[in-house]
Image (cartoon, rainbow, N blue to C red; front, side, top):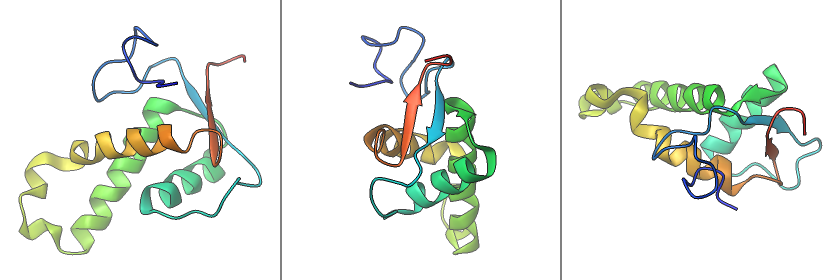
Length: 109
């Protein structure tokens, strides 16, 4: 199920997650953490516990952006786009790992 598709959730749109979804960590994770997005997402979930999906996406994208700046990406045009450059990748990976490293759900479920 695509939790970000307009067909599934009318409140979601293009590169933005639904405003009414939350993410909760799965302990222990169903598999090893493999990517920077997974690492940053799991780290945020361990600090916060349950977090609104939109806030999680913003935080992970911002952390990725700052990591890239530290690695020297400031030389490129990355500074013009800011962290929003990473939002589609973060959304895609959070959705893809749903049920293995974390659980995306509606509050109260």
